[in-house]
Length: 150
Image (cartoon, rainbow, N blue to C red; front, side, top):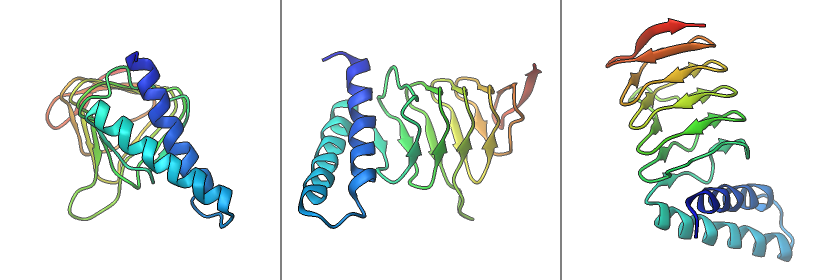
């Protein structure tokens, strides 16, 4: 199985679960269970921890889903590219990241807390983002700071 197929199937399983989790019909319960099973299977194959509750646009791509961790309250907009070992999580005070449209998250990036990454932003490899990132900006470093603004 190609890696691209695996990430599409993982996102498909999450979407199937989310579409049917609140419905009570027997067919919906079956589809919800099928979505859960697919999520578990493709999470194991990809060695990732992506919550079924996270709101992820179907246009999001994970070319190498290994090690990706996404918090249940995270929101990911359309056309994003998320590389391996990325974490979207919360800090002790709570809140999860919101990722805008067309964002690139480099390998090993950590986006933590209730931050917003603006549309078209780029987060460098191994950057630790603890504050909002403006639209079109490129951030890098620990903690991340703007290194380029388009």
